[in-house]
Length: 449
Image 1: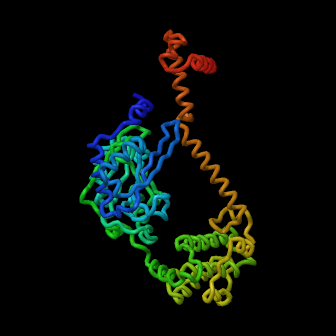
Image 2 (image 1 turned 120 degrees about the vertical axis):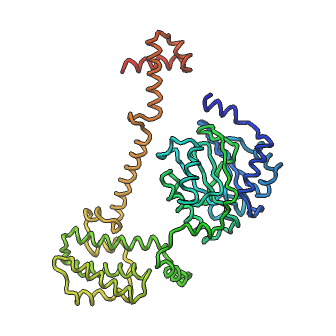
């Protein structure tokens, strides 16, 4: 039976009372401790190869745990194919945005193992491997593992669901990212998203028409701080930076630390690259480039060190940078002429640095971040073309054919074999389930081969 026939057969199938009770039991596990007045998003994502229908409704946790209401929702409101629900609850029924999340009740990781080296494993073999080699060792044992009819979702149930504050959402996303990184061999989804959803058990995946099932680890319930212990330690300078951020709140715009830190570090590397590209001469720009180097080094070091220690280290780094010139500047002179950055640091725009150092277009091609809009556009265009080519290649098999082209080739081969075996056009059409004009078209293709 083909997928299309299975879809037609199951499209309007009703769930039995036994199945509804099993779904109810699973939801009770997934919603332990949740605010049952908050909302869960339930939706059908139906494509069925031709129709593109998206139906979403919101129900309170109380409704979802009521047998009669759940039976109505699953049998009357939706179809049993591609039926999902949100794993976290929402404050209101209007939308499914991150800002509308009310409580963090589960952390979900999507494992697309069918696109990994382990794609030959059956679902049972995959679960056994994860239990023996990963759960409780590489990653904490999940509260449930859900077979989606094609791949897997693993979920961590928060025993005492927490309100979705900025702080708790950041921590949950860090946990989600860390576990996903440790499951990279199985093509775990690296996107950080608390608005994730999973499939109802006893429903079907339209890609494979396989049933959705789940295995519950009932004693595996976690407090958010328990999962926090699996995270790597933050750098030593993080607490100081966090304290400084609090002091700056309401006074001025505070940049995202990781973006700012990476920018400053990359600018230092770019200045070193300019020095290298100019064959360590840089005549006419030596003093200026040393000033810029000390300025950015001071900003980087102030994130984790005291002003006094940062100043001393930035001076040492600048003098070491100066010593690499073919004709270094006199240390006493360059130190005094760049000392002003200890008192005040400058946030120069890329365009300003390019103008100050007269950085040419060819030099910019070797740099990471000190580039103008033209170079940025050129790189973006190259990236877009590369991604386009990668997507194009990804759609083709080892023979260089798209899925449609490969299917056409296989159909032509079938027509050829039947023709050689003495079948007439009408017989070939009936046997392959295609029209006579299509058979004639394939005959024409055969003549070209």
